[in-house]
Image 1 (cartoon, rainbow, N blue to C red):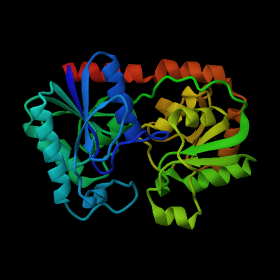
Image 2: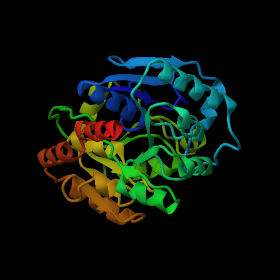
Image 3: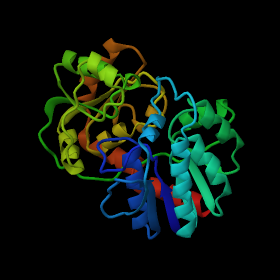
Image 4: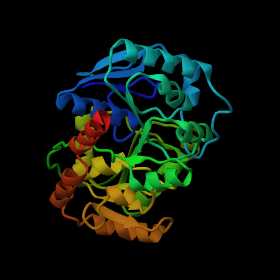
Length: 339
């Protein structure tokens, strides 16, 4: 198949750090390419993903205002430049003669404009139903919709939107067996719903050095809590840092739709300690890949850190490879796009 993978245009695509939609879109495109498909990624100008064919469009600075930040006030109205960017992307998709479109932007404009495309379209909803405009077009679309966990599908069903479930995946990688250090990985976007500051505090209370990697989504939140992510590393190098951490901490304060950081952590053999919410119970095999704690119980979370540190790291890797491989995810997308 000739598959068009449509990425969110709010920022250029780059080799991503742990977790996040950017990492997933690039990993999925590569996995579909390995499976023999002709894959093109449609994204904003300035994107760079080695080994992938990109079709880019210029994107106005105002489009950055469409970035969805859970817990923050949504944009007050439509951004015309965002609609223009999607219009250009879809014009390229049609001109290139794609057989199917895998669309990953959480924007009403993308779902609306894709209605008239002359090929199969699958929209993946990577977030819960937190933006009214997206919920409205999702209810109205005649295109297929997918989301990333059974938990996310339930939240969409409660909003009146039926979604099939295609769970996310991450690359199978071997980061080696570096010495395990008294460090805690804290990765992903730095924003209130991720409770980055709580993770840092819990790491220190457990006697671990916090290693914070990610992108600051909420500058005010980061400033108040003095959260300063470490410098970006090449992904293989970051995986090795991850493999040397005692635990990965995710005391999130929202219903995490999936938890790509948790998946990558287990692939590296590093146990995850997280609150039992959203899709995380589908990602973390409790007692094998990590320890799940009832939300809000910090004393239990600290006990969970101690319990996680003695888990068998080879069993963690084996569980991740069986359940969370990008190959499994890409095969599901392949079937959905061919249907």
